[in-house]
Image (cartoon, rainbow, N blue to C red; front, side, top):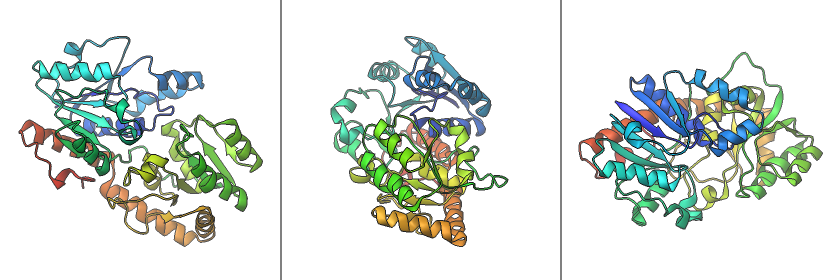
Length: 375
């Protein structure tokens, strides 16, 4: 099968957590014997910011990590007739421009003989629905939504006739324990500040507990405001800036625990959608404490992470994990086994192929077979 994927960024993960999962799926589709071609704009904002942030060396390392995936940067307008020639499955991520999304749909209507899916991994459906409604999905066979609640929104608003729940997952070829690396720090957190969607939460569940407990901690990420950087400096927290995704396993291996802090839209309006770091940290074998988040789809069984309802809970959870190696080990082990059994990019790649097969047979009636994770 020829799989053609249109991403805003594959080579760069600067402020682009989507790249982690999209890369992993491309890797697994190739490993399953399929031809995989990725189109990305050469001047994409994630790539340009990575270069500005001194990340040219890390960008050069990416092709070696994903051998067999044909990444084709383009300048200006794509020749869609050439890009889509012979395609069997086409996936268009929602970070592409509305014009490109529409043009691909029109190509499909004009006689494209491939399954065409739009992939949504954002909260705009609830925070900026008018912005998302600009996407013309005429010609698309359906939508891949990274949570059941998002799938239901697409159907309710009539943006598509067919939608499939397709959660993110861990690229376990990259995210795995590093047994030769001994933990040197109490806590690590890898995540971007964002657009104030979790500013209060990061202070309550991350910076303040670290400060109160005087933990040896490191934070990586981009777009941190000056006041947050000052608070981290006062607390003695190391700030590492941008950490490319393929170097994150080393950071997890160097710490005893990490934190899951979902952005407010996911905690409040889109329950059941964890951040990609939840899957990745668990795959790396580091115990996780989560700020408030509702696992309404039962992605993770009890005992795979600790829960904190407020800052006091977070401090207690840190104390428990850092003072009780057996507890920390049990939590991390159960979490990793859960990810390997249910939440890898191989699982999602196979699920995507199953969805494409259903579409090619004309079986577009939704069923619970595609809700939640494939196993």
